[in-house]
Image 1 (tube, helix red, strand yellow):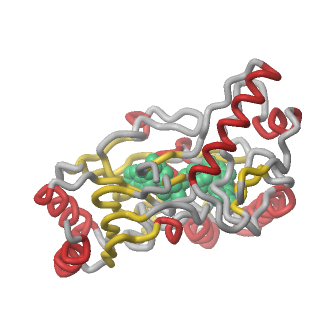
Image 2: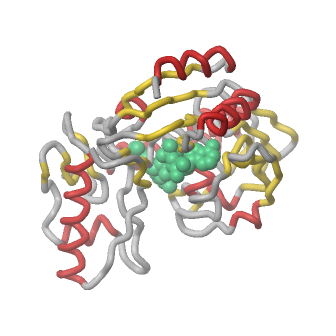
Image 3: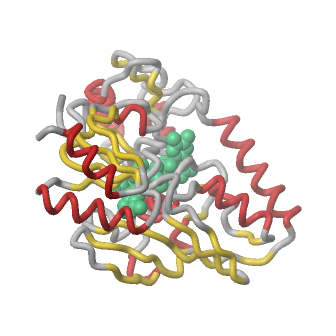
Length: 304
Ligand SMILES: Cc1cc2nc3c(=O)[nH]c(=O)nc-3n(C[C@H](O)[C@H](O)[C@H](O)COP(=O)(O)OP(=O)(O)OC[C@H]3O[C@@H](n4cnc5c(N)ncnc54)[C@H](O)[C@@H]3O)c2cc1C
């Protein structure tokens, strides 16, 4: 396929940007990943539908991404169409305690909007660099709270173009997961239920959470947040540290000396190096403690 020609053709049909052979390192917080054949960043819901029809017409596989803050894209990149729901689809309506927001808005912006509206519930999310869609799929959470607790309903479109409304209880939220993972569905918007409170109290809690992150996480280097889920009754970071792997390196991929459940990219880390480090951690924790660590990050794309 001539990806430049296809990018031009799709670019004429949508208002959002379309790029051929887009280096995924530019679209992931880890700054790692080979090229996506075609990357489309829809500006609105119409663009999403048009891009899906285009993919069907040309027989392109579809991969949906949000802000790329939980993604490891392999070095060979993504075949077909990568739909990046971030930046566009970001409208927000506040109606009483209910917030209806587009899937492309980032959680830090959404939590500030909630703060200004005097609505509590998203304080935990102020430092999570996720799109709302990615956060719903992952049931992003921190400080004992998670997005699934707030979701009333989501508006989704299937890769076949069919739209439907799903209620929060349809999404089977549990620790860092939902029934939306690995389904051929794209979240377009979500309705959240928040609680009225004074902006002062909300801001105070938010700042406390952000200060904790600054103190404990390597926010100055590219990462994808926590690499592993916490196993029942344990903290993954603690197990990795006890296994003697804090600071361990494979090429430019390093177990953060500040937080052992984060892998930092020291400059030019490849996906292969990160995967090798992940395997090394799993093996060491398994042999020392008999515990199987399960990755939280999502792996997409082809081997390089
Ligand atoms: C510094 C840092 C701190 C972090 N802190 C936390 C934390 O405290 N708690 C936490 O839970 N996570 C945390 N994370 C991880 C990450 O932010 C979350 O997992 C987040 O939910 C991912 O959202 P995203 O938009 O970046 O999605 P992506 O990483 O782009 O995608 C994640 C998954 O969601 C799917 N997806 C994305 N958007 C859509 C959509 N619109 N429709 C359908 N599927 C979609 C993708 O296909 C993929 O499977 C952190 C990451 C970083 C870098």
